[in-house]
Amino acid sequence: MRIDLHSHSNRSDGTSSPAELVRHARDVGLDVLAITDHDTTEGWAEAANVATREGVALVRGIEVSCRHTGHGVHLLAYLPDPTYPPLAVELDRVIDGRNARLPATLEKLRDLGIDIDAQAVRRCAGHAVAMGRPHVADALVQAGVVRDRTEAFDRFLGPNGPAYVRRYAAELTEMLETVAAAGGVSVIAHPWAERHNHDALDAAGLAYLKDVGLAGIEVDHQDHDTRTREVLRDIARDLDLVATGSSDYHGLGKTGHELGCNTTDPEQLTRLLALAEKSAAVSGRETPEVLR
Ligand code: AMP
Ligand code: ZN
Ligand code: FE
Ligand code: FE
Image 1 (cartoon, rainbow, N blue to C red):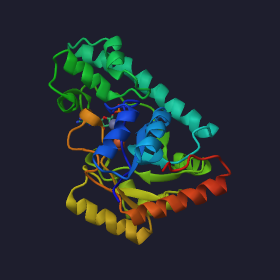
Image 2 (image 1 turned 90 degrees about the horizontal axis):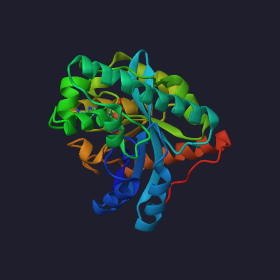
Image 3 (image 1 turned 135 degrees about the horizontal axis):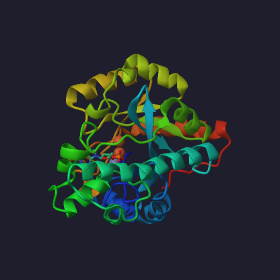
Image 4 (image 1 turned 180 degrees about the horizontal axis):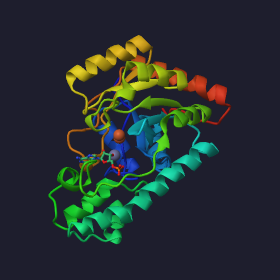
């Protein structure tokens, strides 16, 4: 049983359509796939249509852009009712923040003598609801300024880069409560990835977040080295948090994240889904099922 619980389609910054994503999951032999676009459920319907036909079990999720003690944290919210108003309103706010950031980013690039217009970025974003830096990176590639997304992040768009602009993100503790009230479960994505690394996600910090409603942490992720994975796995065990493993697949948009390169232990998925079922029952919301 091969389970990958973190992937992106072109509704955010992946390069495959939701249908292609599910077919690719089948081709690489995955039994379970979660679609977790940044801040949107826009890909759910198309992925669901294909999943039932292709025999891939689909877990519908969202990777929500959050902030905690001043640092960015990505929260994987699985199986929440997307129509729950506080969740829908907050996701809209994050998407608005993404759109609002674009002119400021382009202004900074212009200050560096690089002229990219907003239309070019929108064209690169294509079907994406959640527009992001990767689409600006694609426009920079098209303009011949950089070779690929990686170079664009390294030279301009990374958090210390000259064209970096902060954007709105949801308050993590509030989002944990919102996801629970929407009948879903929460897993912190790549908690110790370099760019997110901060003290608030140490063992004590994670214990606190568990009290607020956190169900698990993503342990096996390409941004965690072997040692990091070992330490995080121990913390998950001590705190009785679910430990997941996933690819964070972005299609051609991000190298080294092939679908299924990390997977989740079936026992851990069972625990996660049991927590989701409990959350759904307590919330009284109509939540999405795992499609099989
Ligand atoms: P944003 O959503 O605009 O904040 O941009 C963050 C996204 O950029 C995340 O989904 C990352 O996967 C992606 N990203 C970050 N660094 C890189 C990189 N070096 N190459 C390609 N994609 C990246
Ligand atoms: Zn992404
Ligand atoms: Fe992420
Ligand atoms: Fe991701």
